[in-house]
Image (cartoon, rainbow, N blue to C red; front, side, top):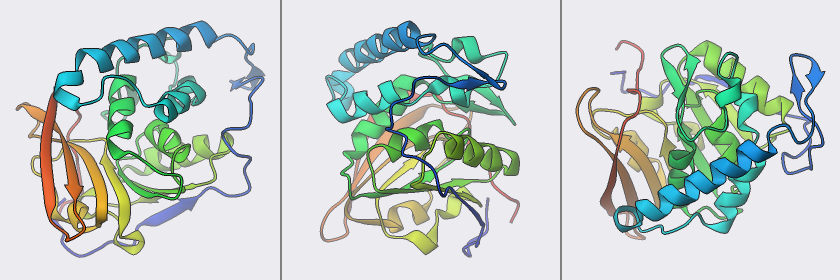
Length: 257
């Protein structure tokens, strides 16, 4: 990713779908209904593991526990719907899993922590860099008014849009485009989040953040140390950066310039 001019990309809009927060009594797997309680125990254990990670990293992050809204979103989003076989039985493990194309679905603790860092309000508009399978977008969608999500891999963009639509997530638009450029047509955003690590923070991300907004992103070259950064933009447009915990993310890739 070295191009500097904006790309129009392709928007994959999710329309005419029921709200994700509608109670789900059963989930589809390979055309068949799962028992309603199949994942309940695994999901509860996952939330306990994420709670423990929040407590363990509190001194570095400033978050001693999951905020209630984030915890509710993590409990409600069916992670197994974003994971393909043969990894589905591990969907509620607190670890990243492969999703193909050299990408992963992020560790649930990291998803929850980065979501908490954004301190989302119901009216917020969010930019996500790196849709992947769509799991992080589904969590964000429960807490914000709208999510623009950018994914460079066509197959992942299409697959995420289809999964989100099947789950009734109507407030996410997946754009097939270069994430280094953000999404200029939708700027400014109240929050920006990245699910892959650039070697250095692309200027477009902070530029597309509204005053008062927050940005959470991993930064660091592949194979080197990576850090999870939290940026705040004050009312005057000045950006304040905070380094939190060490992380390991897949590198942010892009089109040749």
